[in-house]
Image (tube, rainbow, N blue to C red; front, side):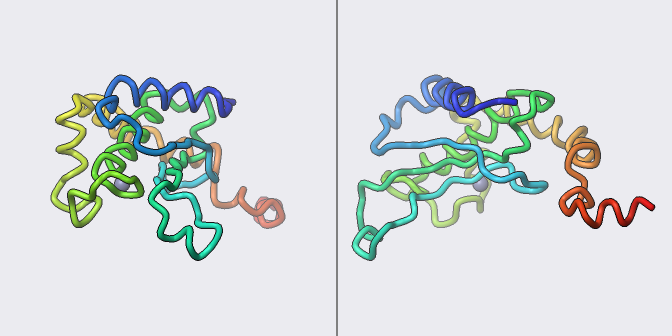
Length: 158
Ligand SMILES: [Zn+2]
């Protein structure tokens, strides 16, 4: 299973190679989240600890990656591509201290344009093809809905 250090190394690689111009205006943390059938990753601000923290500009950004991707069966370029997607949100000022340059995080193909400009579209397409061809099968074998409740799983088996 891939660990925290592995994930941080992937992040460092993607950040330095494709997003170095952003010059890290705040601290970005990456971590494994929960297992999910649908959500590959997400980006958010660190949860404010107090009321005044809501208005702080020096918040931490957290990128969360689907824990199912800890499995080495998932090609590393899938994780790389999810990191690139979340970093595109960051570049557009969503959950980052950078100025927000679009009204909506996805509308108008803004992510695709960003990935294009950063020479990341080949990676993105590779990821999409892999997900399309393998993800459902992977889920059926490794994370079927039945397995989420062990009790029900055994009831249904007999
Ligand atoms: Zn997104």
